[in-house]
Length: 88
Image (cartoon, rainbow, N blue to C red; front, side):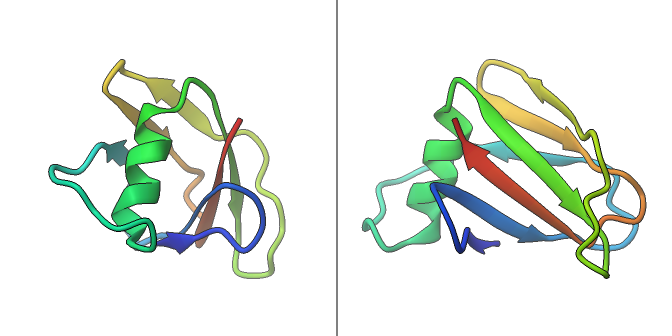
């Protein structure tokens, strides 16, 4: 997980066999440069957009995203190798 190259969000390399990702606010206070500060911002966002891409950087279409009130649950397509998450 790292800050997105463009915009305000995260770029996440997925792990094979993981069918759901949950982004929730980490405990503690972190410096602005720490990726956990950005994770906290994504977790608390009212709206996010999520783009799943495969090994060839092909957009895989719709990604199931659900806001639980305290976290975002993301269910990417099976062939996803990267998720690009942007705060709206």
